[in-house]
Image 1 (tube, helix red, strand yellow):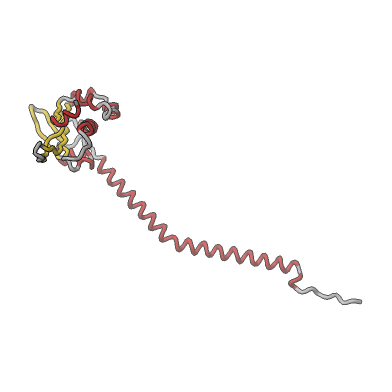
Image 2: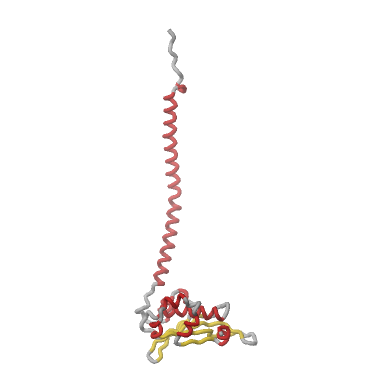
Amino acid sequence: MERKTNKPLYKKIWFWIVIILIMGVASNVINKNKTTDTSTKNTPKVQAQKHKVETKKHKVEKEKKKEEFDFSNSEITEENVKKALGSDFKSCKVTISEEKGKKIIDVIKPPADYWSGESLAKGCCKITLDVIEKLFVNSKIDIVHYWIESKFQDEYGNEKVENAMQLGFSRETYKKMNIKNLKETAVLNYKNIINIADSEYIHPAIQKELN
């Protein structure tokens, strides 16, 4: 009788199945450890980024609260008028006066560069509407004037800062206005804004360009 010879382990199918299973388990454990290690390494960076975003969000909310100042029942002071107008008017001068029992606010924009007299006039009309909308929420204000200053040069080349344009509106006129519609067409129909104003001033040099 021939003696049955045993096959070497590496020639047996079950041996390779066991090896494959062991390698699979080991691979999963290594990958899991790598993922955990990467997550641990990245956590401080993610937290720092999150903190940065939250800080920025907090600053934006803080600035928004400043812009949301309630002017409707506030005392009429230069500081409160500027708060009501917002950060875009920080450089403007504000004067408060009273005439015949009427509270008058003058907002004066310092000199700035304009492409032309027409662009100055259009800008003045558009901004005036924004100004009166923000200020007439306070019932103590009766009249609002918005002024724009500009540099003008005489025939000798000398420069001088003068009033370029002014538009004034009373509360009575404001009540008649559809401010939303007028603001949407202010640039195209700027001459209409000038016509309905209670008071207006246009520097002769600007007026020449508008004629």
